[in-house]
Image 1 (cartoon, one colour):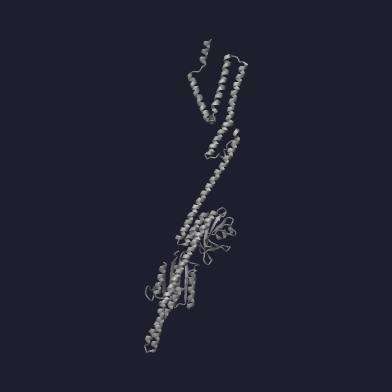
Image 2 (cartoon, helix red, strand yellow):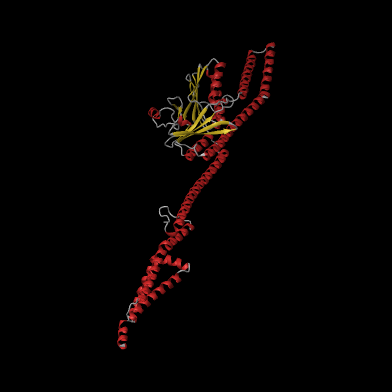
Length: 551
């Protein structure tokens, strides 16, 4: 009987190969199962020193269940005690499994998710609002607190990014503004042409505020306003000469290509003026004054889209006003330099007039007195008529030389008209009319010139010498002085008469007789001008001076 039982038991036991294969498959499944789903929970239990007690408890219950089953199988009976013991062990094992499942779902999984969330926050990556930490189990309250904290951190990070971006932009703007200020300071000391400097910074201002168009004006010493230039809607730059003649709008204001703001109906103004105009609800005008010692020497007008730069752009307004004050200094410096040059020329001319009066004028006066004494002596003595005629001719020549010298001294003492060449030429022609019986008139073809002080002075002296030659030699009845603007920066000055004229080209360089013509040519060369003299017998004389602005 025992031999049969042993034989049966040996036949029911698996072989060593089968046990090894089953164990390998079970370990492989266990490893994949743990890696996929339960490793975070096991790691938490292991960290909390709970894994081994739970394993021992489960193993003990399993062994107990196996022992009870084995005991029932050996005895072949099922007593009430054995049944109770079996049910108790099975219930305990089931309770353990249920506790593990609840522990995992209500504590271990939320705790693992909480750990991941906290690690993510600590690494500077707040939880996305699209995937918040789900509150569950006993950690639901803490989960809500973590979500709230994560949202606050997200807001802080976003606000920080916005602040950093804003500060970076502000620093970049300040760097650009400092560079512009440096360029302005350098331009004030280095620029020789004020108009070019103002036009250059008009473009800089337009780019700084992203304006649609811009204009620049200067306030003249007589409180008149001069428009230096503008930039239109297409970005084209116009200087003063290109703007002439300036149109007037229907409302009576000047309308250059850069003026796009309309106080009336913009659609109607667009149709009438042939270019687009904007209303006050679309575009606002930003004024940048050029101050110097409390005086406005000029201003820029920048036309920007609404809402403009007056709302929250105080830094831009500050830099614009600062640059405007620097440009005001540049305007004041240029005017001061021009006035200093003018005063220097006046002082030099006055000094020369004094020297002529104290030297040559006194000598001529003495010679006139001596010739008069000679005439009286010749009248008292019996001399030939030829000697008396020669003495009278010498006396007349000295009188003429004395008159010319006095006129020269007066012209040296007479300063250049502060308003420019055109008023000075008008005064010169008016005085010529008063001093002679010749009818002279002045025809200016342009409102103003941009010649510098030296060019204006030399041009005035050439016209003055031409009128003096007409008075002495032309025997003319009518004289015309014409000033014409040929192109931007180029001017033609014409002096013509209907006198006797002369034959051939104007003589040059003949000392004594034609020194006036040589001086006129020398004056023209000093300012890079071109002087031409044309004449025909009985057809009068025509003197032309072409001069280009040095500005």
